[in-house]
Amino acid sequence: MHSIRVLSFIAVGLVLLAGFPPASAYAEEATHPDNPINPATGEQYPDRMMEVFDRLRELFPENVTIPKRLSQAERAREGQRATRLEKIGERIENKDGKLTRAEVEEFYDWEIRQITDRIQLIEHVLDEKSEILSDEAREAYRKVLRSSRERARQLRKAKAAALEQLAG
Image (cartoon, rainbow, N blue to C red; front, side):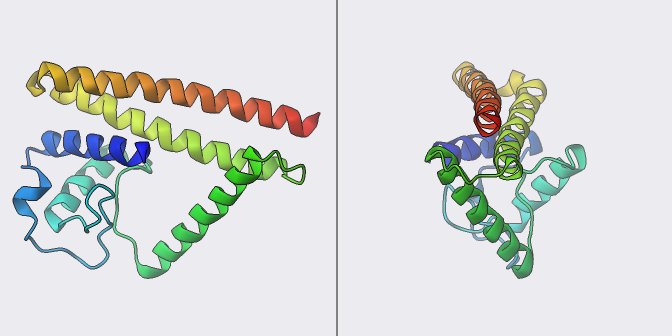
């Protein structure tokens, strides 16, 4: 749930960067059937918001946290990957002795990738739009940035510990 709040928070900053009004201001706009679901609203992103994400992907082409259109087949593959990683995460948490090094690396690499890409977007919002953010919003972004950096540090440490346990 925390991840959804953080992503929604970042999305607000991305909308600011693009100079668009909040999504609620254009909720009735056209929406392509392949547009992803906004985790905060449970509704698909409108096409105009997807244009914002498309421009961001031009700046950050490898960033996995920027929503993008996926075909039905791509969505199915992403769903399978998410399920597989979730199961690996549960096995790591339960200290399953049958985990492979590759599984541990895949799980932690993905988790670290998501958080570092999120950090990249937060830093971008703070660098590019800090002057138009209210003091409260700017501090909120900084707080999310600090907690995200700490989470990345914790994930790297957990990965090292899990790999050490496997070698152990």
